[in-house]
Image (cartoon, rainbow, N blue to C red; front, side, top):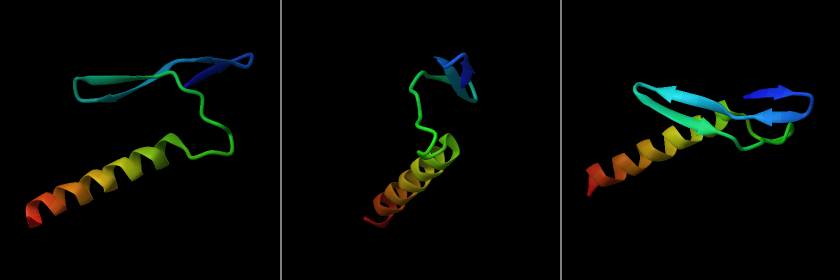
Length: 54
């Protein structure tokens, strides 16, 4: 995410051929993008395990 003179520009996250545009402002005291992505991956892995168990 780029920031210039208090103006937030959009950034992006790339995974393979997929590019996700990020234009949301995250509070300085909030969670980092790394933390959010980590939580998402853990959540999806748990969902996958639940499906395999049933």
